[in-house]
Amino acid sequence: MRHAGRSPQKGRCGRRRRRSAQADMVCSVNGYASDMSRNFTFGPPSPEQAELHAIAERAFADGLAALMPGKPFAGVHHAASESLARQGLHSYRRGHFGHSVGHSVFSEQWPFISADSDVVIEAGMVLAFEIPLYIDGLASFNLEDQFLITANGPLPMNRLPRSLATFG
Picture 1 (tube, rainbow, N blue to C red):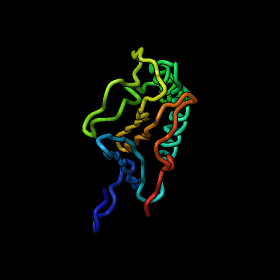
Picture 2 (picture 1 turned 90 degrees about the horizontal axis):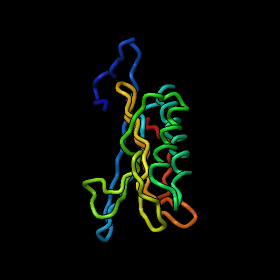
Picture 3 (picture 1 turned 30 degrees about the vertical axis):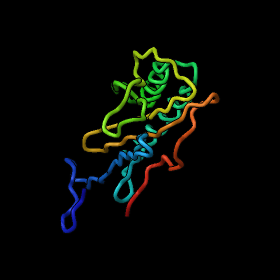
Picture 4 (picture 1 turned 45 degrees about the vertical axis):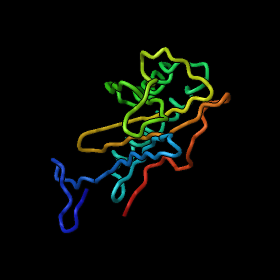
């Protein structure tokens, strides 16, 4: 974060590096935990930061479309991974794109939305779905929301926009 009285850091090319922040938020209500993340820049995002977040938003939408009852978690992981690869992140690898939530704000809970998971998505599950993208020197973004799985698909448990927010 930028501190008052200090000049912004400059990258290797001498260009001003734009700061970003990720807010990973949890709360507990009546013993049940939640999990979500949003992303911010201080000042306008660089074109590269804006594109990275747009990639996360598109991969989020693609993975979310696969988060349907009767489908395996592995299919959601595949949809998100394929979306990232189609958008140019060919070497991106992630162990999981989400997890169950409920009784702990301190740890992610099984089952995980992972490539090798044969767990089938069921109505009534509460899951956190996320697309984390950490690029050294550019941004640490994690787009994450919690969903109740219904017979018709995922129902978001908050109304916050998923777009990149800017301060200043």
